[in-house]
Image (cartoon, protein in one colour):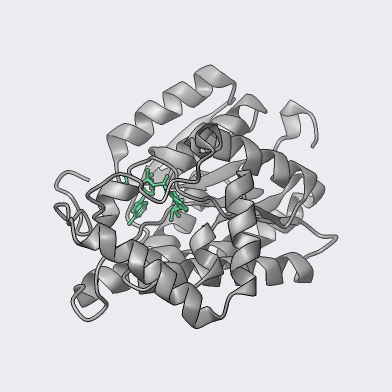
Length: 281
Ligand SMILES: NC(=O)c1ccc[n+]([C@@H]2O[C@H](COP(=O)([O-])OP(=O)(O)OC[C@H]3O[C@@H](n4cnc5c(N)ncnc54)[C@H](OP(=O)(O)O)[C@@H]3O)[C@@H](O)[C@H]2O)c1
């Protein structure tokens, strides 16, 4: 990386909390200026102040909904209006929905797919010239999940969206090798706002067993280190890594049955669903 004065802007989507905020802290400590986006304007403004205190020379908050069809284009236009050309893009914003495909509301599934998949493609495409212009200081860090490694009955669209992010990121890493860094982060379960929004009643029953590595700050530390080294895929946590490798040895139908059993346990104890947009966000 270059010296602080020339460090590129980092755009972090989903920076108002959870893994995104922890990733933003890592880049702030490195002295990068930061553009932060999510729907919650107040939380973003607070995050921006905290990130400047941590070492970022400038942190800009842009509140918008990336699941809206015009969200990514509006964000790109707002960045241009503020003369911000990110050299690093962190595609982190995303959420899951627990439930039977036949019963989940179509609008919720489509909004999730637009956020988890379409916004990732569109933002990366729109910002790629600036990322490539940053040369070896630039890059793309996208957040998939260990969900990417197998089919996910009762979270079918979510698991498939993360399989997309992983395969797409690995493909871009090959296409762009030597021109920029492309890293995909695949976390296992991490206690964040994710579980309530997905509709889990019972916290994180599918615990990795290595608690320190599942914390959002630990996940962000591993991801940031992997990105700096130019690694293509990072799965934080020994058990998560072992699981991601082991599942490849199983027939896909057997993996689907195992996930179905786990997700049915969650679905049997449904929480109040947070899939629709909460008031004030
Ligand atoms: N937590 C886990 O167990 C886990 C495991 C594997 C992968 N992941 C992935 O990690 C990423 C971050 O999730 P997290 O665990 O940190 O969850 P989180 O705490 O719920 O954070 C999600 C972030 O995305 C933002 N966001 C949500 N909907 C948005 C929208 N429509 N437009 C713009 N921003 C939006 C949220 O802010 P607003 O609500 O203010 O918009 C928030 O900043 C996601 O891609 C998730 O799929 C999470």
